[in-house]
Amino acid sequence: MGEIRKEKHWQLFWLCVVDLFLNKSKTFRFPSMDCFLKDARASGSLNLSNRSLSEVPNEVYKSMDAIGGSEKWWETVELQKLILAHNNIESLREDLRNLPLLSVLNVRHNKLSLLPAAIGELHMLKSLDVSFNMISSIPEEIGSATALVKFKCSNNQRKDLPGSIGRCSDLSEFKWRPKRRSSR
Image 1: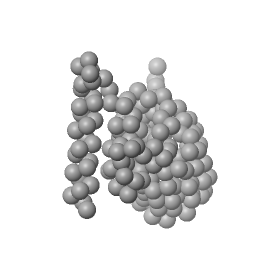
Image 2: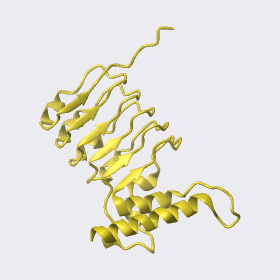
Image 3: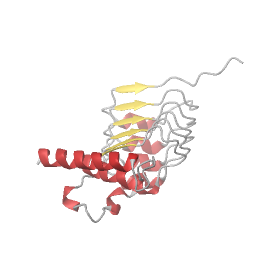
């Protein structure tokens, strides 16, 4: 089963490479979101880092609803790892709750000012990195993400944590350092 999934993953990868470099007029173009989502549905991982995104594409929140004609639903996996680092994303929608198997969420180096309450509905979330944003407060609901093991929130505006974070009994790696103020 693993070899079949790996082979399917590589087939999708090469389709994305071809889509990336050539189209009928042989001009360069970026791969479509569909290509990234197909790969994510095969691997369970979606990396949209460094794409100058100002928002999370709608398709990400409903990736399993967008299974294409050539895909077989029984060969797809739900999103488990979502990397959106180094973009210009200003907010995450409450639709984050549509990704119940998410175990890794990395949104470091964006422009987030808050986290949605839906973060608490991600009961499989083990690693959350929101470092280098503009977050001023963490929602109380974070305490419902009890599987959380790593939580990185350095270089944000927040001054304190909600008491509910104490319910995350497996939390073993917590990194917080206040945002540095410029001396200019």
